[in-house]
Image 1 (cartoon, rainbow, N blue to C red):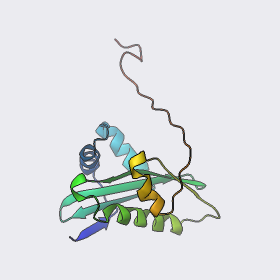
Image 2 (image 1 turned 90 degrees about the vertical axis):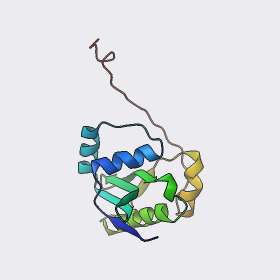
Image 3 (image 1 turned 135 degrees about the horizontal axis):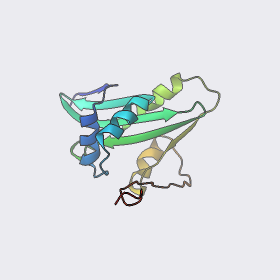
Image 4 (image 1 turned 180 degrees about the horizontal axis):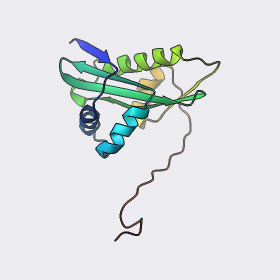
Length: 138
C-alpha cells in the first residue's frame, strides 16, 4: 500500500472523508472558507483515492488540530499516524518559544493520541447552529 501525502485537499474530498466517518455535513461554502483559512492541510491518498486528512489553525501561541479523519476502510494501517507526524513536523517549523497544541477527539481515539504524546485534558465546547426559525425567518 503506497500512501502519498500532499497539502492539497478539495472541498469534495473533505466532504467525502467526513461523511465516511459519520461526521455531520457542512455546507460546501463553509468548507471552502475553512480550507482557505487553514494554516496547514495534509491529505493522504492511495492512488487517486482520498483516504485521510487533517488540518490546523494557529494564532501563534496555540495550535488547533482539526478534522483528523481516516476513511474506515483504511484505518489501522498507519495513515492517521502519518497525518499526525506531518502536522507535528509542520508545527516544529513555526517560530515559537512554547506552543500549546490542542485537539478534540472522542473517547475511543484518546489512546491513539496518547501514543503520540498528547495528554488528556478537560475541555469545554459549545455547538452553535443557525436555522430559519432561530433567525426569525419562518
